[in-house]
Image (tube, rainbow, N blue to C red):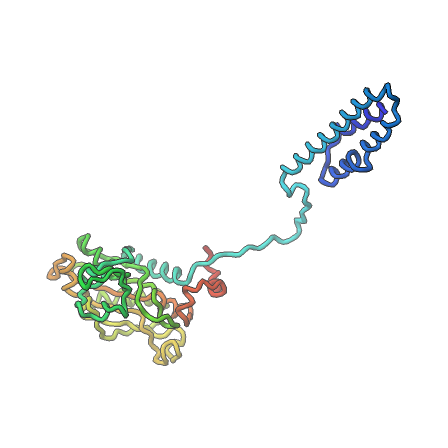
Length: 344
C-alpha cells in the first residue's frame, strides 16, 4: 500500500490540466465515490492492528494532498479568463454592432451654423427662462400684444408687469442680451429651443427650435439682408433655389418681410407640403426697429441692422421630407435610423 501511495502522490504533484475536462477527470479518479482514495480506505480495513496507526496517518496525508491539489487547480482555473479554453473559428465573419446617428435637427443646426460662420457670424446663446423685458418689452412688444397672453406663452411667474417670468417664446431675447452687454458691430446667430402654448399636431408643437440672426453696424441696409439670406438659401438647398420676399409685420423690425423658397419637394410644381403653391415660407426678417436699438443702449442715428429668424423643424421638413413635427421628439428608433449614414 505504501508503494501505491508514493506512486499516486508523485502523479498528483506532477498533474497539470490543460482544460476543465482534465481537472474533472482528476477529481473523479482520486476523489470520486469510486476513486482511488475510496479504494485505499477500503483496503485499509484489512491492515493489521499494529500497522493501522502508521498507515492511517499516511493515508490521511495522501487524501489531504489530493484535495488541496484539486482545490488549488480549481481556484486557478476560475481566475483565468473564460476565453482561455474557447476554441475560436477565425474564418467566421465578425459580429456587427449598431451605429449611432445624429438627430435630423442636429444635422440641420450644424449645417446652418457652418454656412453663417463662413459669412463671419458667431454663435450666441442665452437662457430659456426669460423675464418680460428681454422676451417682450425690449423687442417693442406693446403690453396689450396677443403674444403676451397665456394662449401663446408659458408663464412661470406673472405679475402683469415687468417682473413676469416665462419660457422664452423666441431666441430674439439673446439678441437683446448681446446688444445690452456689448458694442456694435454685432454679427451673430442664436440657435436654441423655444416654447409656445400651442396644441400639438403634425404641424405645431409646444416646443420647437429656432435660429435667429442679427447684424448691427454702420450703413447696414435691406440689400445686405436680402443678399445674406439669398446666399444662405443657395448654400442650404442648392443653386437654382428661387427666393421671394413678401411684406409682413413684426414688432421688432421695420420694414419687415417673410421669405419664401421654391418647394424643394415638388420643385415648384405643387404638392401638399407647399399647399400646391410651389412656395414655402421658411423665415421672417427685417431691419431692426430703431426703438429696439435705443432700448438696448445703441444710437439708432449711427447704427442700423437687420435680423431674421427661422424654425429648424421647417428647414428639416424641406430637406428630409419629414411631414410630421411630432417625429422629432418621439425618440422612435425606426425614424432615427433613417439618418444612420451620419455616424457620430
